[in-house]
Length: 134
Image (cartoon, rainbow, N blue to C red):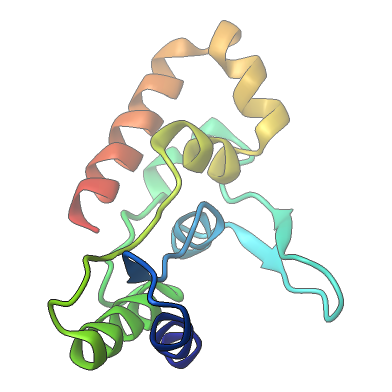
């Protein structure tokens, strides 16, 4: 990831550089199972929080330890080392709503907005707290 970003920056002179886990990797770090097809984009195969009774089992993702998050932090450090302060180095992550939906399962999450707003609020708060650390 880092090598491609560095080469692209050097070739094209972008006004910024970086890599980010997008919206799937944080959900994966929190226990959601992803599938990585050989010839297509990753997708959610099994959301972690299929039942609200499992909310207590939901562990906050640690950016330096869980899932693929450490790989992105390492790639960002490599980009920073190669490019320095020439341009801003940044990352992108999914927002709390999207991440919560991926952890709960999008269909269930959308239904819960109406049926179980208190649990949705708790999940959104947990996800938001994690996103602030990244």
